[in-house]
Length: 234
Image (cartoon, rainbow, N blue to C red; front, side, top):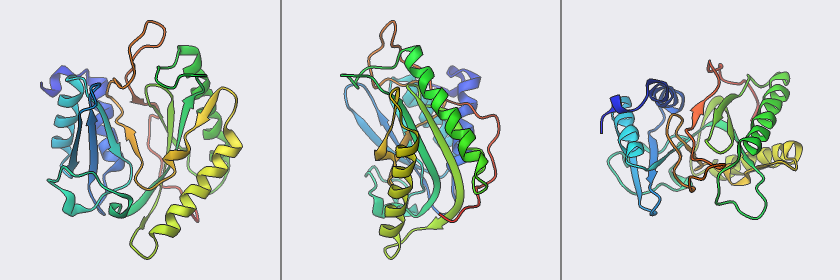
């Protein structure tokens, strides 16, 4: 499998995502999971190696995930999954918007259900952009819904402040969920933790069955530009 087998538009999203989440504070953790449940953990600080592996695993049918916040540098070369104690900085606030599918969360969204996610995401974008502390959030397509990513000035985490930062992140997320969740979408409360992972834009999502009206889709970055870091007192 070579990177030339992935369409250029998808490949560009993989590249852009690496540039977005890379950090001088630590390294990137990735998970590659196939429909049979096989789970492979890898760590990266080299862009070309990251791109090559993501493309290779995705073309083999693995759904590709990456941690949003940087991990400890001494995990490089390890295949052991991190814990929240291994997160070295908070760099992003983030919101995960999924369709409200009654009775079964193990199926993909229809086009109509997915449209509700995008409508909510763009509404939240507008509301947060009007608040002076926020730049316009980065909008991505998760394949089944939408993510909003907000870069903030990095807050290094350590044993002294990690619990406080974790609690503040959860409190911020709880307010977002209370304010914006509606009958058509859910805002995933599990994302408001330091270790949270997201699907890698540009890759196809295989974790739910492919059905005619609920197809497997390709994730992507919708925002054309990445904003400056939001200046806020998180």
